Each structure stands twice: as C-alpha cells, then as structure tokens.
Length: 243
Ligand code: SAH
Image 1 (cartoon, rainbow, N blue to C red):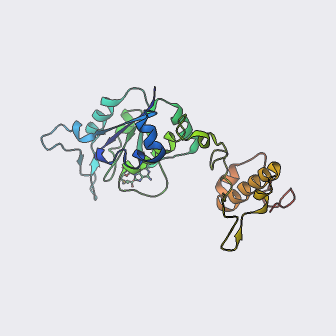
Image 2 (image 1 turned 90 degrees about the horizontal axis):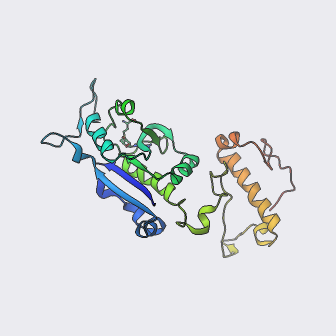
Image 3 (image 1 turned 90 degrees about the vertical axis):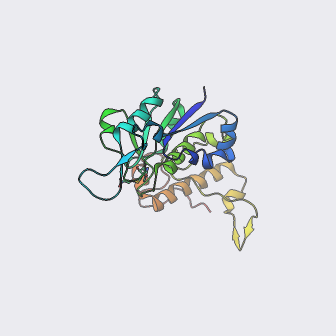
C-alpha cells in the first residue's frame, strides 16, 4: 500500500506542483505515493457554491465555513491523520514528519483568507500544523512542504541518502557542511581533514562541525541536545582541534 496524500483545497490545480518533478515526481509516477486534490468548493451547498463568510465580530477578510470544511473532511476521512495548515498550529518537526511518513498517509486541509471557523477543531479530530512563524497566503504551499518532507523518507524514494540519519534535524543537530571538487576554488581549500582519507578523522571533523554550527546558529536546538557532545556548552573543544 503506497503512502496517500489527499489535499482539501480551493486550488486543486496547485497539486502536485513542484512535487510532480525530480525525486518526488518520479516516486509519484512510479506509484510509491499517491496524491488526490479535492476541491472544497464541491461541498458548498448553496447555488453560489459559497465556501466562506465574513468574520463574526467584524474585521477584514473572510472565514472558511465550518459546515463546508467538515463536509469535505468527512467525504475523504478514512483513518489517516487530518492535518490543517495554520500558523496557529504546532510547528512541524522532523520527528513528526518521520511518524507521518510511516503512517498510511495524511489528509491536508489547506486554508485561505483568514483561515477556518474555529469550531471545526472542536468537532473533528484535526491536527493543526504550522510550517513556521510567518504567514503564507494559503495552505497549499504549506501542505506541499509537509508532503515533500514525508515523501523523501518513503522507502526507495531517495535511495541511500534518505536513510541518512546524519541529516540536519534527524539527530537534533544541524548536519555538517559539505564540499566537492575542485579542491581549491577562489583561493578556498576543502578542509584538510576531509581530504585526509582517514575515516575516523573525517567522522570527528564532521561531528565537531555539526555541534559547533548548531551551537552558534541554533542555540535553541543546542540547548536541547544533551548527550555525546564533543563541545562543551561554552564551545571549548574537548578534543584536539581538527582542521
Ligand atoms: N488569519 C490567519 C492567517 C491566515 S493565512 C492567522 O493570522 O492565523 C491563510 C492560510 O494560509 C491559513 O489558513 C493556512 O492554511 C495557510 N498558512 C499561512 N501561514 C501558514 C503557516 N505558517 N503554516 C501553515 N499554514 C499557513
């Protein structure tokens, strides 16, 4: 059974969009995952096919109607998690992505305008997901982000690379930086450790850079990363400097 994504959206033509290309696109063509985009407007009940209405209490914009949204959810619900894309949701993590990629798939509810009538979250089991602390114009791009993160983890989609538990965020650390030929470019050499052929030394260099970069760039992640550090919190190296 392949991983199945269903997007509930007012713009079904936005799917698969970028996920129709490259590795995700090939995996889609090969049937490693499936994607349906269902138009929320199909579940409108009036002759104008209305999906939104003005906000209670006044103010700008429009709000997606609870009755229409829940009719759309109910039509596709089959036990897969229902994820509503919203900046008010729980920020997406690689850990949640990994869980989702091992589930049978997910239903992605894409908002527009001011978002959803809040009552849908009281009446249906819906997980509110944010892809970051900024505001998009619609949930479709957010849904594509979540789908992309899940699909690349599906067996066979990325080959060896996807098993890479060293990837940024998989270990709670940022991944070490990468280099490739030429060995000297615009006066910059590839770090000597990486050219040494000494696997233990290369591993040590990567580990140290991963820790150092996490500590400097993402103190929030570093604060949560407890065991197995080469660097102490102050950044002082316990091991001999590698370069
Ligand atoms: N008025 C809302 C924002 C609506 S933006 C608020 O301030 O909370 C319109 C739609 O874009 C949302 O319904 C949601 O589906 C999507 N969206 C915007 N930013 C997002 C984010 N950071 N993560 C996930 N979805 C987002």
